Length: 281
Image 1 (cartoon, rainbow, N blue to C red):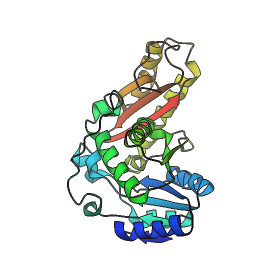
Image 2 (cartoon, rainbow, N blue to C red; image 1 turned 180 degrees about the horizontal axis):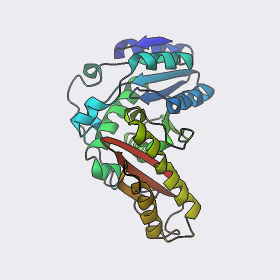
Image 3 (cartoon, rainbow, N blue to C red; image 1 turned 180 degrees about the vertical axis):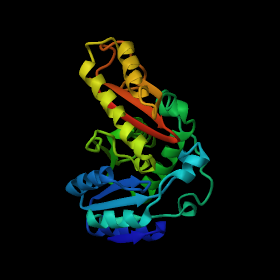
């Protein structure tokens, strides 16, 4: 596995692989603290691309809470070992000054997409995501880039950004990887206390209830019941639960309002914030 920290060196190597050797480049951008969900993206990447490249960069511009940025788990040694064992070909680990030699002042317009759910409760978050992902795409120039379904709204934002900037990269979305008890895998899970971790399984259990009772129960009643089930735990508090049109992320009031419908939730377990979603239609 090759490791790069400088953009110029990485771009030189990728140009050699793409232009001279005709290799296709698959890219998995991460913020580290890797888990099996990340490795599933790497596996999918390896099965469809000649070269698998992963980046590790905790992006400061997507954190609207500095304490959350400082608290975000960082496990560089373990990450390196996991990527090597997974057969990753290239790892890019830049410093902040490498990604942002100057302040990134770009403002993206995502219309309604970033005004709801995560965007409503984390103002500026998705603009920071777009800044760093577009910057990484410019550096890597991948043929395909891989993201997890768990970050459903983020995937919608990135696809929109790719269209806006007329980029040639194909965005590949992989299913959410879950723990045996159903909890969606997340780097933040390692920050949960023992009791919080046990109780966090109620999030996916409530979403599974929503999937089983979609079409049998009015949308608003179902949303209320999902919230009640999660909030029944003294360790958990729902920040939002939205049942939305997968196309524009706007809330639906009836099951016939959209072709694809998702239930999306954000939950606080103490100071730790967890998100998850399921497709209902």
